[in-house]
Length: 158
Image (cartoon, rainbow, N blue to C red; front, top):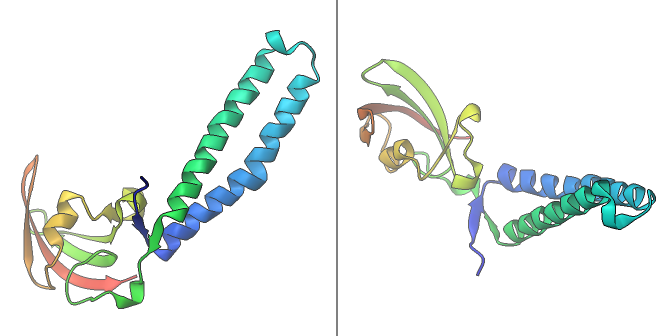
């Protein structure tokens, strides 16, 4: 049974673009590689042909997985997000009270998390600790390194 996953509009669009690339660019390239290897003669001892067929199998599995993900995806309506408290798809600016360092993170579905882009999973300890908090409130979060005290400065929607 397939699992429903929630995506922002941008996250779902990224999946669709990746699928389109696999189907329109990667699939024809692998088909051409198989045809070229086939033209080289005896297939029973043709490592190039075997490698191309393996690559085709991996590609088709990836295409199938993406198609399933997209068909089970549910789009989150970002316009309905309440910015009075921290929720999924909130952009949260906060200050670490111990280091006095200010940071900004987008709280996104697990499948869209990317720390380099400032997107943390709603299931991460930091996001869980901030969920439901309002501007000015302090989130106390237990992490392996100890206890974090983060004060919410601003909550917006991207």
